[in-house]
Length: 111
Image (cartoon, rainbow, N blue to C red; front, side, top):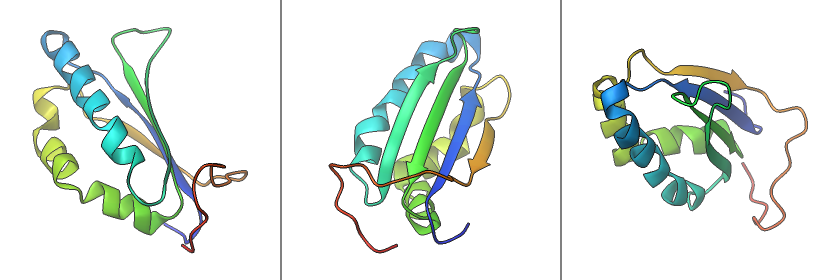
């Protein structure tokens, strides 16, 4: 992970019997994550072509900010128990933003 902005997106395909629980869990991460230093975007979506699939998108000021996010206790716990909710492991794609800018309502901070 470089020193500049970094993004990720991914797919969470829940077990049918745990779909609502997984959705609630992922949504519970939204506000705390958005409050973290360096969090420029954190979104959870439902795939329009497959409503059983949840899609998440994150944009971070730096790789260090993303690493700090992934070390948060709630995410460490989720990583340990994720397969209780998923029918297959998370599909995650790492992005190198070409046009990322800090949100207008976020103070610019050195990475």
